[in-house]
Length: 425
Ligand code: IZC
Ligand code: ZN
Image (cartoon, rainbow, N blue to C red; front, side):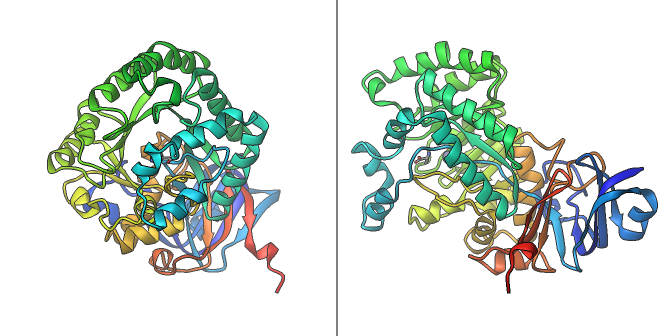
């Protein structure tokens, strides 16, 4: 077996390749540990993984192969950020400061700020300007260990501007080392011109936007902000059923700010994921478990909005719901690119064990954004997307928080980030 890439001398290699996908219950703590591990790849795909002597005996290394010495530290799959709004025109730190002084996210949205202020800026921005912001956001994600990111549209809210968003997301995926999964979120908010005719906007999404997005082949998933004051359960159902008929799989922003029956709808529709779930009802939890819908938890948003109640992660795991984590990276309610701080919050605020947090940021996140055939685990045939950490124990990732513990990032068998090279002292 030929190889053009070899990572050797991992103190501990966590493959996550140790069970069915997505992972539920106690299996979320199995990390597929290989002491003294190695990974070999050819043209970006893993051809051998396991104990170093077995890997080295299996492969024939090209003369000019890249060889990475992990020097005895922890190596994991690349992290996967399964819920982001990473393509936007402008940040909204003004609103953040207003929230710190006591205004709520919903009050700010009602008075013309919030998503609608992002929409006004987005519609004016050129594709090149948006690409520039998207590139720097993805590059920051990569430096924190993220090698796959889902990105939603949803700041255009007209056919033309939603297509612009999805074209930018598609271009980022082609040119950037981070793998990108595109999601259509035309049902993110009611734009100014449709505020007095909300059902009319829902019809417009179904009759115009979904067919246009589907014809252009620009989105894998369709998402809806199903929330009090935004899209009702009935409106969300209509949008997601139309999207599914047009070839896009459903996802939902569900029960973030109020118990709203959105998780129940996610179960009914057998959506790929229900995200946020801070206010999910017991019936909603059971509906997710019964339908096998993945809960994507976004504790960075709860922290950033200054709320004290977090999503019921323990209850979700105990009821058998697969749990994933994501940043929700967006200018309004969670301005971070770091899956490491999200893993810290998962342990500190959601009481997820460090092992559960890692499974939720890799294998289950891959499932949540439909990339489980390619990434999320280290096994033959999967992409050689890896993180070489500064630490030798996975528990140190959530424990040592607010700093970047990533030493090297490998995407498709190429070293795309190398802190060792940039250190001057
Ligand atoms: O820009 O505020 N919650 N969507 C749903 C967001 C937050 C993004 C934003
Ligand atoms: Zn979101």
